[in-house]
Image (cartoon, rainbow, N blue to C red; front, top):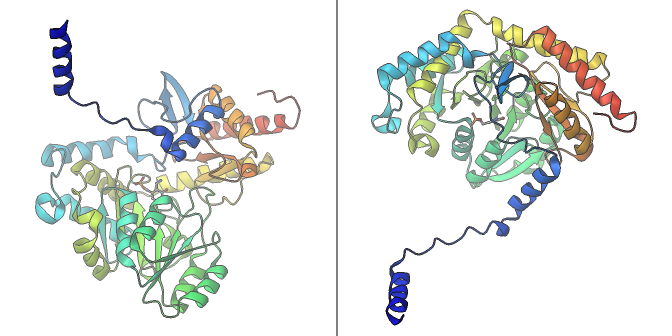
Length: 422
Ligand code: PMP
């Protein structure tokens, strides 16, 4: 007995120490999230597994669903030509460039993609990062610093805010799309600041609306500020040939200091770009952290985006198909008396249901009817503005659109008759 007690003690001494427990209860943000998911309904709507390509339809649990939750706006993510270009690139360069581009990671596809992006948009040059999020964080943080001011729309994407925070500049948000308020803020604050940067988006991902670019350019000039536009949702989707907000408003892209975009949406890949003057791009290429201290974009991702841009330049018909689909969806919503908020001329169409419970019920009902779409609930939006957000693609067809809007309208109108029948 004594022996075995000794052995136990000795074993305890040499046993690997149990790693300290991660105390999840200390993280209030996570606790809130869990509570929200739990009270949301029957099924956790996050990380739902799907098979196949994310396009107008998706396979989930072996069943087909009409899909309105994909950023594959132009449908290129499943295009055989794009897939073939990726296969060729992987065969030639392998699966990774295995280094930062600054050192041994540079391959010809990188420069070709940057030339294609800048010529497509109409800027002098462009630089490719490995994610849209990293692009915003790394570029904004390098354009302004402690002695500067950065002014961003109140509905700016997380990556834009992170970039602003990292920069150390004084950060001020202005009311959504309100260039007059921006003008007043700049009049008050610009004064002694070394640099001022205005940050907006080409299409806002919550409301699907487009800012008045002419006004923002006027204000940037008046206050000698720089203008930064995130085109994550506008590149490939607006403008007659998909060249984004400058084409949409008939503005020379060189009027904007930096046009940023993602490769993960219309360009069917993964990554981000910053496009602007040759001098600015050269500066970012040597000094922006997310570019220098990160491996270069993979051959597969570079090849996919390059093939999409080349295809779009030859044949922009997917852009008009997307725009026709979005218009039809919006028109039908209006005919059914549905509230689509600020949306117009873009492939992002929120249908405001009002109230998280009703919105969740309607989303679940649509899911049971074979439609995959996601709700936007409080606190992402005010409770009364809870909505279901539809992302259109060039691949949707008229029957899908007519049927979907009809179902949504029936669902929403049934809420007016108690009890809720969905
Ligand atoms: N900016 C905006 C406005 C976005 O919506 C997103 C992602 N949805 C990003 C940047 C980040 O892009 P990515 O997912 O390609 O990293």
